[in-house]
Image 1 (cartoon, one colour):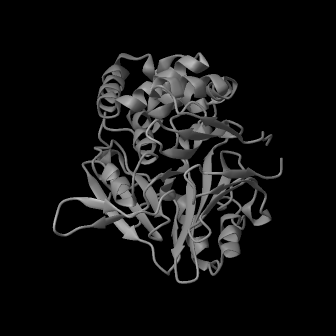
Image 2 (image 1 turned 90 degrees about the vertical axis):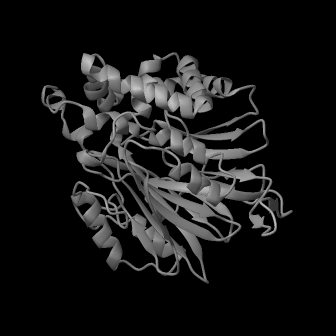
Length: 395
């Protein structure tokens, strides 16, 4: 599989969200156009459906509800479309693909001449998390359809309010449907019981929030049409001021489909796994000294879900692998023992795009390309400075 170097755009502060989207779209126009032309989910399912009368009410509801709740991010999406020179409809479809695909007529894929296995398989990711006396780690495999290989980039943005964020981004989508983190002037909040005012501790330029994401497979009965899109929620997480604020952003969004969020706070040395579903259902698990592996099925939120053999296989394999050190975590995420459903994926349908290693004690995020067991680090980001300084490795 041919791979290209992972590129990064440093941007901002911009005059407005539209400008930030426009400059992003302009910079990565070739990647965005290439992704759209080769994405079979878009070409063979989403676009044909969007041309039917049955699609109009759903697309309209998604547009109205998400634009109303997140007008800034909607403007950013429009700017990305304009900057890259692609139709806004294409941007809407890829950003809401998870919210639209469950409502496609069953005949849509069957009538296509394409190999339906390439787009009927859901995206998959794997995470292994721990917070013990000796280490605090969040390690994440970013797995996706092979159409995304070579069609991702990093956005490193500074906003007018001084907040900065880094988001691993799928071409044409809002940052980030994968993983990201931000830096704010405040680290944690102290509660003054005699008032309703939260006084910030004066420990500036430390990370507030990081996150990684895992898809989950709620059954059709658990999905609500026209709700808030997962890409818009994760974009909002990049501007969270604390782990509690991030959790509030998740809980306050009336989603269409479920998701699994791993919320990470450096200052307080905490990791939360948050599983969500439609109708405002949320379950929170705090990660402790026992390593916690999450693939792509619900583990603690009681939701009717579709059985995923791939996810089950990875969950079972991870349970028997050692998890005593950072190297163990990387070895686990690089495991290829199962012929059909390995943890580290190399096609033909799903592909591990990269691995993110977040070390809460070192205050770093490393992005590893290729099998993480081999340790080929592409970028190392410092999560202890407001500027989110980074080093590019293996140039």
